[in-house]
Structures are given as structure tokens and as C-alpha cells.
Image (cartoon, rainbow, N blue to C red; front, side):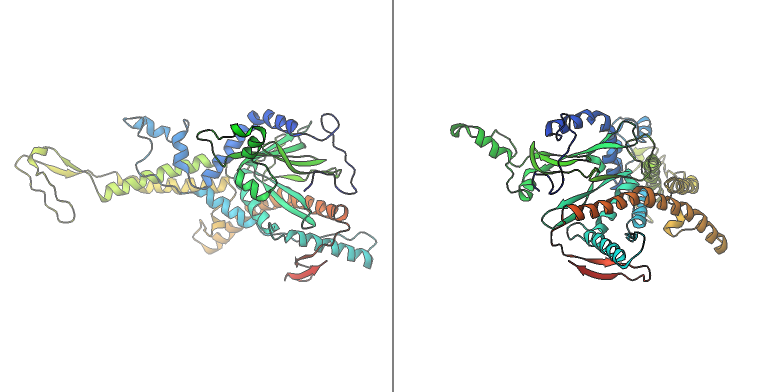
Length: 462
């Protein structure tokens, strides 16, 4: 996109001096909130690694984790955790189940303005098909946006749904941003956000492929230095990472790469192009909260106990041999079924029996821990096809009771978190179509569902 204002839209951006926010101002705001949001960004990255099952590598680096118990019991500080480290990722199972519930696309409904006439009904149908057509983008369809948002929300509690006017396609397209790179600037009362800054790093060759006119660091260095002094420092990366900074508020959207303004748009729509979606919204808190962040420590405890139980089973199958007088035993001791250990007089050999009597109690403790994780996350066993009751009638009743809690949670997220964001996206989509692409020829195709049929119907329109 060019850096010129939108057509037929006046340029009015309340920056620090009455003009648009510059790169230096956006960078300054990002740096001001860097310390405040650092812990939250680190928590987002750790939750991503927790979902991937990277528990023990994270636990070894933390000083206040479950592995501190093993540090106290071992002879050396380097012996941390059980010998065999297993992962039973209940957090991932809960997030994946939420993702299946939140991924399906809703139906678009455009009300007809009263009084209902044939013309107004046709206009409502046209707007509805226009939204469906914009949802069916070939690069990032709304089905993929919902699928990614349904992954971010239960795990991290936040994501950012944006709309971008694609001048090449002649229609708005969706954008989804991770909370790991977001800096929402809170408003005066804390309930609104004045602006949002996104900042991440990307390789220069990726930037060059998307923006052929972009000048790399090496190209700018060659232009600024004389010919006889154009050389690269030893060990300098030929394809370094560069900073990408995006700034968006109610009047502008800009993107800078390594300090260079690549594209942007100045508008007077009066709304931000990005919506902050939250799984659970907390009053007077910038960030939302997910479903599993409070039960990660329970999952860590379960992983530790699973690992210890597996070691106990191995010691029970392969018990340890004790020789009271090793000099009375041969140098090589045969093992296996029916093996005989020839001992000289006075020697004694016996196997240690691990305390296997405690295994049923420990298994019940693991089952209770897994139940507590799923219950605290709002996704009990019945949603995984399990019933804690033996009776069919009682099991059906428990299924309805426990499943109702999950259903109310899903309805809250769909109605308040994800739903309001998509509703706002649809309104922005219609406004952009009526202002920016009013005189453009647009070709759309998609599927829609009317109120009398449950079967999607394909359509094409220009």
C-alpha cells in the first residue's frame, strides 16, 4: 500500500503535534511498555512451549519449580528430576478440545432496515454475500483465522483480529496477530485502548521477497560509504534479523521495517483496524486470561509423578541385586529367567523389592490430579468421551450437568470475546467496501446459509 491517504477520506490523525504518529514516537511508546509487558510476553512464550510438551527443559531453568523437590533429595545439585522424564500433556488436550469448539464459523446475519421493502432486502442480501465473499479469501480465509484464534484464546487468553484493505484484491482481508508481540496502549480509564503496537523480528530475505523495493542493511551501508571502504565486518550475518514495528489506532496504520516505512494508511474511520479478542476479560486489566494458565503447575506435578511411577515399574521388573560379600560372588553374574548365581560359602545375594503396594494409591492421585486440571480449565472428562459413573442413566445425567458448564463457557467466549470481534470486523468490512472500493470492480465467491436451509449454497457476484 502507498503512504497516501485513502481516497475520499479526509486526513486527520491526532499525533503528538497534530499529525500522524511517526516511527520514533511509536518506538518510544513500545520501549515505555517493554518493561511492563515483559513478564506477560515471557508467560505467553512459555505457555506455547508448555503446549508443545517442553516441560522438563523449562523446569530445569526455573528456580521455583517442581524440580526443586528433587534438588533437595539428590546428592548433587546437578542431579535434577527423575532419570526418565515423561510428559502427559493434559494442557494440550484441553486446549485442543477448546479449539474444536471455537473453530466453526458462525452464520452472517444482516438485518433489514425498516420498513422492509424489496430494495432494502436486496441491499441486506448484497451486504451479507459481500461479507461471506471477503471471508473466503484465498490467502487467509476466515476459517483459518477462527482456527488460529481458537488456539490462542484458551492457551494465552488473547489475540488480535485485524482488517486490512488490500488494494490489489480490491477488498478487505483479515489479519491475526499473536499477543507475544503486542503492546496494547491502555486508555485513560483502562477499559479502552488508545492504540496497539506490534513488534517482532524477521529475516531480511523474507522482507525482500515481500517488498522488492526494500533496501537491506548492506545496500544502505554501501550507499553511505565510499567505494574504497565498502567491506563487511568479520562474522557479520549476511541475512540478519530486522525489527518490524506496526502502529495502529483510530486514525492510522503504519508498518516500519528496520526504521523504514514500508506501507501504511491514514484514515478517518474513527475505529481501530485491530480488535483485541479475549478469552476471559478481567476489568481494569489490559490482558485477558486463558483457560489453562492456572493449572500448568498441576500438569508439572503430574509429569513428575508419571516419571517416578515409570521408574518404580522398571525397578519392579528389573529389581536391584544386593551382594553382602562381593568377594564370594563370581566376576560375571548371569541374569534373566532361571539364571543361577554361584556363591562361595558365606556369600549372600538377594533382590530389593520396591514398595509396589503404594502404586494403586499413586494412580488414584494421578487420576484425581488430571480431573482437577480438566475441571479447573472448564473441560471435564465427559467432553473427552469419558463418564465417571458406572450406571448409564447416572452417566447421562452427569454428562448433561458437566457438559453444561463447558457450553456456558464456550457461549461466553463466542458472544463476548470472539463474537464481538468478528461482528466488529464485519461492520468494518462493509464500511471499507462502501468507501475505499466504492468504484472498483470486485469479484467475490463463497458459500452462504439461509434461514430455511442447513445446506451451504455457493454464490458468485461482481
